[in-house]
Length: 342
Ligand code: MN
Ligand code: MN
Image (cartoon, rainbow, N blue to C red):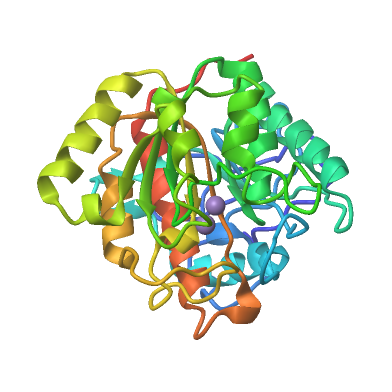
């Protein structure tokens, strides 16, 4: 069968996938029936199912085409389409984590969040409402941004459902900045705003890949005050420090809900050139993916990959990395305990 369901249908009649071996209702289209370069692009060639109620969806992947929060190079609004295109090579089984994603999870492409390209407040409300819908339907969510300003409304929705969470944050930047040009909300401030709103607490935030010059010697004071856990790039390449950081993360997270946010500029621009605020000297793609796999067993209830800017990409390197990360997120979710229905 073809992947497309009518967007208005309340229920999907029958298994939409002919993926070999899949026992689930929703899974990617069988590439032997329709080659990977064919059909209308959806995330991982999954069925397009925007209406989640009554559809037994475990994970909804949402595009968030918005870059109104960028302060330097824009373009992240084009990422959901680029990642959909690059995700056609994502297959079904993750041998590194030993998990058949679609044997365990019903996953759908739930379409894009409705955004307003010139109104960040309206867009944040829309993101929060849509992510809330996903969790009310008993599903987890993965957002493909969009710039990093989309994190705040995601956290508002996740906090309303789960309360205290642990935040795992890959990035070159701490995103604990304050207002710029008089604006409180942009892609450099979501962590500070989330702390101020009581959505997360510093000791439950774990940042990986931080590097690069600061505005001043005191820019880090806020991070120290808030007791945010930071594994900067020097720490990352000190294996003892890296192990200790992940051990502490696992201890703090326990089996409680975790949110994983991945700013693609955490990866070196040699591997991820298509981004708005590149910083040289970062993780390789492999190190990034390997670090995500270290989160196996954590209770990941939501995740995103942000700051992919296709107009600055080369040979789809960054979009391809984004698509690969989404597959790793799904693998982690397949191995996490199932959330209770609302
Ligand atoms: Mn960044
Ligand atoms: Mn960021």
